[in-house]
Length: 450
Image 1 (cartoon, rainbow, N blue to C red):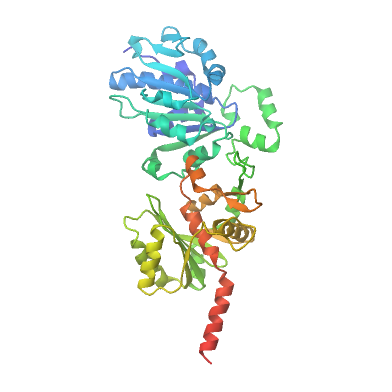
Image 2: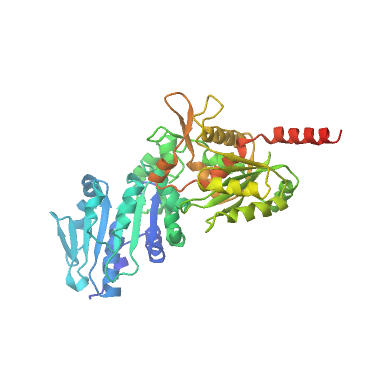
């Protein structure tokens, strides 16, 4: 195979080199952020890089796929640039096939430019590398379909690379996966193979000054997304299903506190324990809360749900717990029964889907999340834990009966968002009023001592 100087050919600027370097060290990489940061160019040339790299490393030609949502976008972002960018001595571009074929002396790989109107049509194809331009335009289900085709005979280090502005119909799952690494359980094994490279206009030394000024003149939220590359710029906006964020990222950030000194408060306060029992591969989450603070005390998968019994028993010896609120659906019901058998009398089994006693809410789940919202906005604090970021996935709207409802978990799953186990565990703690429970307990003590 003939040698070439790729970097002289590609003429990457520094941030694009950082993008390429991240692909060498990770399986999934997002190059995302502002407009005008050279994202599409980087995708084209990194696709070419791996066509050459795989040939050199494995001695075999490969198939590379570069995708956009529509062929019109492929034409505008990529196809019209191929003839002027990729040299003729390196390979041939076939207009009708929309493919660039490297010459045999450079490995013979094929780079196919494809659209994603029907991702199922690629179920018989195999790709050593897949590149998606504006990935926020595709749903999580399409992403998962494409990953079934990310394989190639003899290639051990297949790659999935993508680029996008922080805006689009399916922005939320992309942010969750690449930026926050709030991963569905089936992707947990890839946690250390996912990278996000933030791109900004000033990273591109070739960007036209007038274009930069145009970005600066955009309305506030658009400017945040396209100029600052802010993945939270449109937070609080109504999504395509009519849902609005329960809590914004700024409100959540303001609720976070740090420091071991807060442990004393938990040990000297009346606490509520919220338990969301994991099922079907989900994690079991346990949250401890008093009037001032809440913290995650457990958030893991369990081989046996009955291990929760030991966890709760041990926590009860460390903290004053006046009530244990457990999601009693499915396997949670068995946990409740077993705790009662061994003498726990302060249990409250909760079915979140049951009707709320409050007329403004569709069900208990909506009522509890609304109380959680008011507690945070009223000054409630969370001991800093990344799993509390799940609260950002919780959205609400009013249904046709003008009742507040919370976004269903099946919609979250379709968007690629994991079950909000920790958020649910925290919400469960709001089933009871701590002050009322304390008052009742004090009355009982006084009555008993008469």
